Image (cartoon, rainbow, N blue to C red; front, side, top):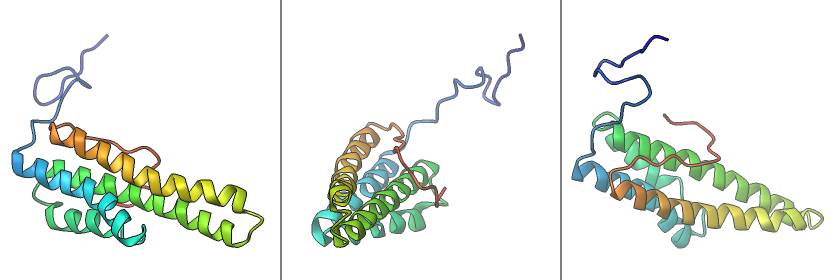
Length: 137
C-alpha cells in the first residue's frame, strides 16, 4: 500500500491547518455570533447579514475566517429557509402542525449552533455546521 503524503510531509488526511491567529479567531467568532444576535434583535429576518459582511471583508485575507463566515452564512440560509417554509405552512392553518416545529427548529437551531460554532472557534478549531445549503465557500 502506498503512503501518499501532503506537501508538508505528513500522511494524506492527517494534515491539520495551522493554528489561527488571535485576530482571525475574533473575526470567526463574530461571524458565528452575528447570526444568533441578529436572530434575537430582528426576530430572525436579518441573520444572514452579519456572516455575509464578515465573509466579504475577510474572505481574501484569512482562510480560517472565510471558512467560518461561509459556514455561518450557509447554515443561516438553511435555517432561514426552514423558518420561512414553517411560516408559510402555518399561515395555511392546515400545515401549522408541521409549520410551527419548523419555525422553532429554524430559530433555535440558528441560535444554539451559532453559539457552539463560536465556542469551538474561540479555541482555534474549525467548526462545520450541519444542514447547510452551500452558497458561499
